[in-house]
Image (tube, rainbow, N blue to C red):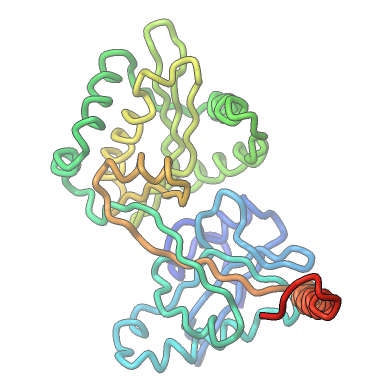
Length: 320
């Protein structure tokens, strides 16, 4: 069984077949666990030579598990079984480097199978039905920033992705970094989202037509994600970026149940998101070394031990 187009077997937009095809054309496939023709679990993954990973511009890579399993499994027996059945379908000896969806809270089967598990954090409003009530919880400086920007720029909805590509280039160029999001990838993803009525693209412009900032939101009925944000360094003090975040939350209230900032583990960026008063959400990064990496680590460990023993025998270092 191969699932195509749009599927209900997904935690969020990132697990939709059309999304995977946009970010990893021809390079992804899904792993399924089925019982009597019924899908119990689904895991869409990017397969590269020697590696299975999460695609670019994709916060998480599954996996989805049937709601009735998680709701009626108090001893985690079925979840353990199904999770193991998914893991067993991963090719042996291949590196695995994935961000699991926050819905995957039972990660112990990965630990028991030799994966390294690391927590990551995003920030999320779980209920955006009343955005004005959320606004009251913003940090006072954040609210002041929004008011300042409202006096300087206006927010417009657009169907032109090119200004976003320019803003992304300027954002990274200011930091002497290469833009990690190729313009063609951004274009392809934008058009795929438009085709599936899953994108909201907005810019903040001043009276002279200068674009201060732009935000690229993607959404389904569950969650609206702040996927991409770019700003012109010349106008960084206008507060436009923060105003667009607020406008994104307001928009999310019309299409989704929740709003996710796509948080960062970088302290300065995390601090910015935290000022909106959203709830921290933990999701897990799971890593399994490839056979080559594991062999190299073991050889390196043996060599380090041999060198240390030699140095001790020569009296260069003292035995511990």
